[in-house]
Length: 145
Picture: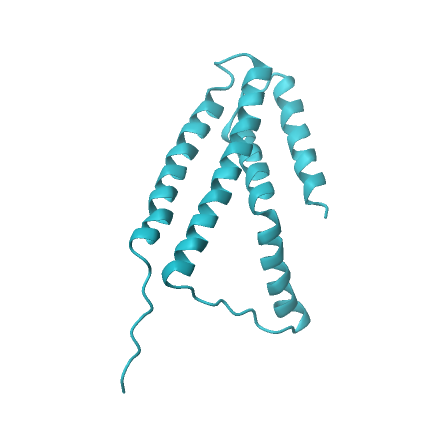
């Protein structure tokens, strides 16, 4: 429940640092990436962490990862890519707003580079994720003994 508050504090700290004249760096950019990923994947990541925390520290049942194959796996991959797209849109929007707010291309060059690199990563993720639609992941053959 505190995740949105932490995200907001991170964003405020980043903006204050940049307003004080700091040159935008990868660290500032990672703040925007973190916020985008946190919003797009937050619930899913927190649920995963909760399951493993219960297992490791409370003696709960071991989380089972059920392997998916075929169209189910392809659907999971596409869904994951759409979450990645949402994270990219959110994070890049924060970066673009900070670029606009600062208004000095020399100080915000790192942000432009982050958006470009993340865009390339998003395209690569698209190719991989949607390739499972055309070439579904097959269930491994069972060993005969």
